[in-house]
Length: 333
Image (cartoon, rainbow, N blue to C red; front, side):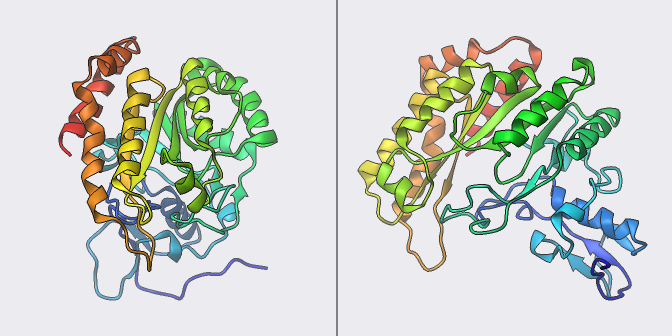
């Protein structure tokens, strides 16, 4: 059965924005929209008149969000990163990258947990590409000169798929591998094997220091699971922690507890960097007072213990540049 095509239009004009690749819509950040770029590539490959980020003309069909993608995920090709300008500075300044040029891939669509109340991917089907297909894309990215790649699946696959992937990528000569990063849940996997296979940074959604909150948002984790941050850190991986404030049921004491956890993890070096966002669910009134805690996570720069843990991780000039960029970004907030 042939895949569905859009109706004939003068041009299909892809217009990515600072919201295109975000799972929490209050965040505005330029992130290379890998799924949208893959869709543009598919249409282009099928003879459609596709343009990327050009001025909109009368008669154009404008595509901005993943919700407009009407081709099954597993039928999408790897994005044409020349056509979609993946090396453009707009995408390169993203904080997930230490080495440049860098880009995003998408190993899977949505999240294998798929239950978090705040996530736009809640309840959606988790689909994972074959290992060989991902390996082929990584080899091509290396050929194009990309030095770091971050997987923006809702959550990176684990279990059998991860074991097969690590085995396959280990078969590539180290000088022909790109450095990897991905979104990860707080689970027990072989972090040392991931580090040895080229992974550098893992992004963990910790969310809160309060177990009641984790239960209410259906996170599926325990406070004690932060031990996996320590395990990943010991394996030599750079951990990035994501947290949230503004839960309607939380008090200021609850918010302070989460803030303290962020600072403690940064001081110990269990996470190297952190971010905070505001809990927002349709039809639910958030605690607006909690917004003041978001910039406070960056106050950790005043701690000598934080600087000690950061300096101990510096191995080369790239590490120093990365630290400087992260600190400067934090001070802007």
